[in-house]
Image 1 (cartoon, one colour):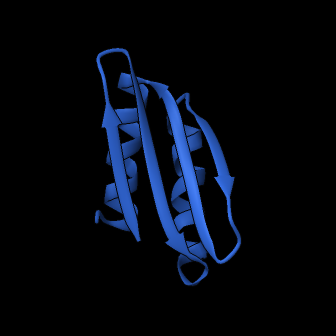
Image 2 (tube, rainbow, N blue to C red):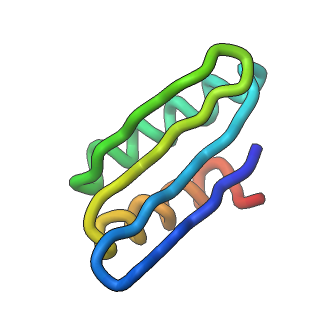
Length: 74
């Protein structure tokens, strides 16, 4: 599982790459992110799932904090 944060001054993007073995853990964390932060979430892939979270810098940084707390980083 891998979490990447790409940040510029106004917007930010988080890319979470995981396998289907981690699906339950990642899906729960993504649902928490959607409740806490005003971000857009796009998912793709079946066996290797890629989740892209985009939004304003402040909201994405809040989402990053939640993700790292619940599923860990790198």
